[in-house]
Amino acid sequence: MACGRQTVMDETRRRRPLAVDSKAESASPIGSEKFGCITERGYMVVPSGLDSQCLCELGGLLDTSHPGERNLLDVPVIRRLARSRAIRSVMEPVMGSNCFAVRGVLFNKTGVANWKVAWHQDCVIAVAEPKEVPGWGPWSIKAGVHHVRPNSDLMSNMMAIRIHVDECGTDNGPLRVLPGSHTRGFLSDTQIQDWPKENAIACTARRGDAVLMRPLLLHSSSAAKAPSSRRIVHLEFAAEELPDGVRWRDQV
Image (tube, rainbow, N blue to C red; front, top):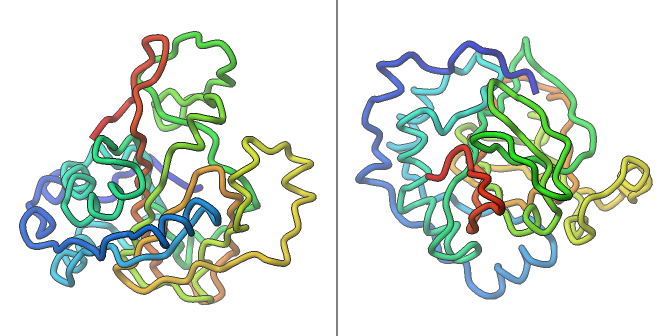
């Protein structure tokens, strides 16, 4: 991901009130059938519950030309988005009422930043400081934040929500997923390479849709055929504290 140090919005826009604070409506509840689909397939496309005014304001805050940015939960309006009734109504039926956001990333593809992402799993978490935990590692620093690969059980219990600020069709380099691939824990490079790809699904989305995805689900994306702004606010949620005194970098 081409995430530079430039911020996606200036300080004034970072702190501007957003309609999500008061006007966003709850999304349709995720029933047992949909929950079973997420459990079995590892992903689902749902309405985010954000109304048109909120989407317009959120779109106005996020630079269309910026390819992406980490540490998005540092931005006050994104923290409020993560706590909003709209997002909580999607996440709580899957993760429980005690869930919280632990990492935020902006993804975008533009005419000058249009990349292909190979098949992979999301295998790391962002923590406040490094501490030795048996079986955890390797450690790395991304955008000034400590990241570590924990045990696979912890990653299996997490869930990401990818909120589409712009429409993402087949020509916009959408997320592609391999249903059911999240159930095998961490996969080796060889296992990823050998996993059958003929059943891959392209997660196209309308503006305002959200993709729920287990981090260990194999996913990729191609370069956009018709590059235009394809902004996605990616929020990762967990529902448990970390062991051995390790602390989440964010807990929103």
